[in-house]
Amino acid sequence: MKITIRPDVVEFYHSTTFEKNEDIWWVQMLSFLAGKTVTVDTTTLFPDRFSIVPVTDDKSIWLCIPEDMVSNVIDDMRIGKGHCGWCGELTELPNEITDRQQLKCTECGQKGFVEILKVR
Ligand SMILES: [Zn+2]
Image (cartoon, rainbow, N blue to C red; front, side, top):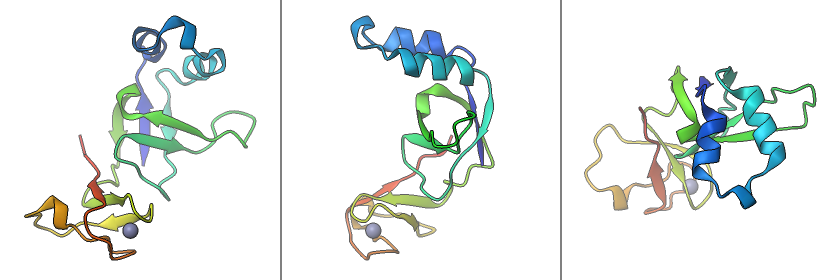
């Protein structure tokens, strides 16, 4: 699974962040990532962001990219999956969802904590 970072991500960040709150390091990372297609760490999938495998020379840097900074998702593995807010694991969704509140996590068995991973 891969994502493409929107080419205008730096401008997007400036437009959505108060100037005094801007993080210079993050702006440099976004400049580096703008327009690039990068690999997602699929061991944990989230409803609103992507953890990506290290892309810089420093392999200890793991970045999390918010959904709205992404222009394209390739081989989306979120289809049919949910994220459990109780145990934090990925869970399989039933084929038919009648009541979101009653969704049960296939990993820990808790009900009511499963968030459906949205797919574009
Ligand atoms: Zn769970």
